[in-house]
Amino acid sequence: MARRGCRVKRAYGPGARRPIAGEEVVKTKVVELTEESLVQAPEWEIHPYSCKYCIYWEHPELCIDPATEVKEERLALKRAWLRRVRGEWGSCGRLLFVGDKAVGYVQYAPVRFLPGADGYPAGPVSEDAVLLACLFVPNPRHRRRGLGSALLAAVLQDLTGRGSKAIETFARRGSLENPSGPAEFYLKHGFRVLRDDPEFPLLRLDL
Ligand SMILES: CC(C)(COP(=O)(O)OP(=O)(O)OC[C@H]1O[C@@H](n2cnc3c(N)ncnc32)[C@H](O)[C@@H]1OP(=O)(O)O)[C@@H](O)C(=O)NCCC(=O)NCCS
Image 1 (cartoon, rainbow, N blue to C red):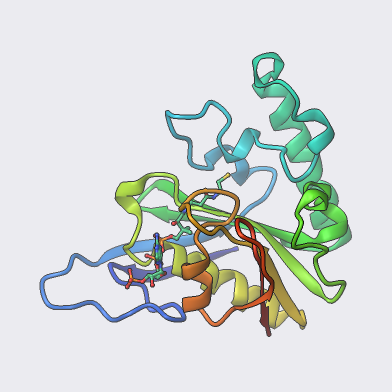
Image 2 (image 1 turned 60 degrees about the horizontal axis):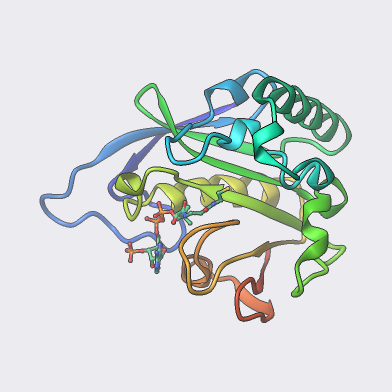
């Protein structure tokens, strides 16, 4: 499933502002995250385990010592997770491309598929909600160009079309990173604080 033609700087997703004169407009494409498309997920230099190898949400019990982790094993686990969730629940992620390069990643599912959510003090995630586990535009050079908003818009469109009641996420206060990005981003897009926390508040948007 590919959604083409969204134009960025600026994307016209919820909350994104219109381009102003002189701003570059870049064509983007949003593609479903599948076992096959996973290999195209963005990678970055500062951490060896980019999204395609990350099993923090899916298998927290295996995230103990990065030095002993084998990328191929993690990729296989991630693929098996995608196969299971897509089979039992449905579509659960998206990749955002600029040209032929994936620069954004998002993953979401009911919390029963994401045991990594268990340890968050602001939890639990509501039973009627889908958890947006991670939203990521890894390269800071690509941020603040509307790409995160375009990805979020694709998720909301998917969930609304499937009749989901709500989406929740553990956003971050005091840092731009992990797990789904700054609380300001979600508040801008209409989320509210469901349960507050000094570091990882649980934010909710009713759909
Ligand atoms: C969250 C994230 C995806 C947002 O992506 P983005 O492309 O920069 O977001 P957008 O450009 O669509 O931002 C839309 C609006 O959200 C708000 N916003 C975004 N980033 C913000 C920030 N760092 N601080 C405050 N507000 C912010 C702004 O209102 C922004 O609009 P503006 O630029 O016109 O002011 C990105 O910051 C990110 O990837 N962060 C790291 C998340 C992470 O670590 N994920 C897990 C990895 S395992």
